[in-house]
Length: 384
Image (cartoon, rainbow, N blue to C red; front, side, top):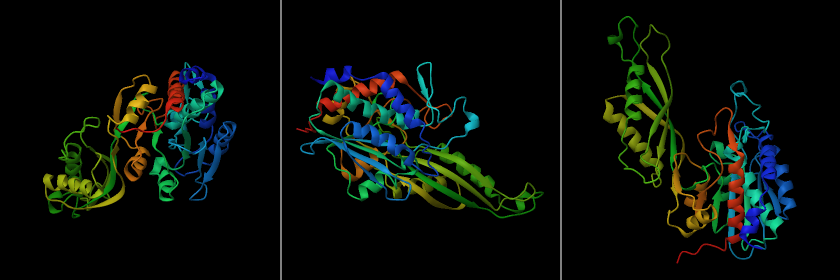
């Protein structure tokens, strides 16, 4: 038996039903409650003969950890998050937690981000079992909490606890079946702009914080942050997502607040990102303001020429490499642990977090075949 036998053993109905079963588990974050997905995952993993445990650093925030194999030799890790973003049910034409298939598309919150990817990764292992193919490496699965709000109670907690050990890793986030080797990080911040109140009939007697905030917003959207362009990620950006200020139409605004999403390239630190943000504001004019940093997640990448990238591409039938403008839990593995990690999964980020989120069934099947081939052939990372 070989990798081709495992690839042929992938079952379209089985991978689709598992993805649908996971979608039916309401694991919205916030508020954060991944427990409904634990037992369906444990059931499949037990069926595969895995050693399974649950890691729960905070009440109600469990991650499922499993290993298949003797533990000797190399380890390939699959890391996927089970939490999903909230929904506005009025915007959906299908039940968001129904897991329905229509015209070859599986619909539901988390269909592509990323319960479909988790189902594909598990189907690859089921296919190996059915074909009688024993993976030459230990295969580890981490199905984690809290990715959507930063990973503090998920992969971040696993890393802090010393529970992540692997020679290479795949994160099956939606990548349109391409191999993701780089991703941008983000600095989330609030800019508080101060002005001077006056009567609305005489705006010149005051100083409008709203007017200053408008100038700042325009400057940030057009800013060149001076870091150049990344071959897979382009240039860093800044989006002003919300603006709030003033008290009444007939009062010159004394304060205005902007929330911003400043995307960063791999290698940019929190301090560098903040400095270029304030530098862009200062270059646009003289303003009375301060910046409160709400969160920071670094960018990350693996060398596109790394042997593990080539191995995943072979399993995925020469899939092209790409970058992701958003971030994933791969950053913890790459930056903190030095584990060569790629993002590969079914579906597109263009429909992630949207109403009527979906994943094509054919992409679930293709991804499962890639995982089956990778499990059947991975023997560790050779860099020489």
